[in-house]
Amino acid sequence: MVFLLFTQFIGFAQCAMCTKTAAGLDDGSAEGLNNGIIFLAFTPLAIIFLLGFMWYRRNKHEFVG
Image (cartoon, rainbow, N blue to C red):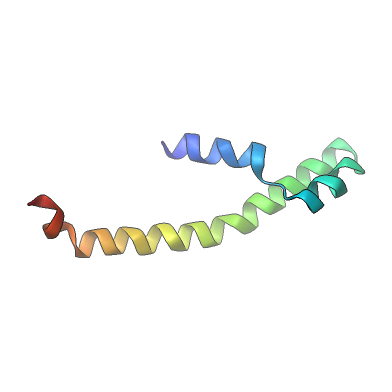
């Protein structure tokens, strides 16, 4: 599931402005731009995942029934 999550980012990492910028670059620079966008998106996603995991661990007894 995590693999599928990260493979989706590769195709959809660019906003409209970044897509226009990348269209004017060569393939190597466009790939670097895309990797930079993914790198910058990783930290907020990791924080959200960590907070969700901590919330789940804290409230796990409520889900068991």
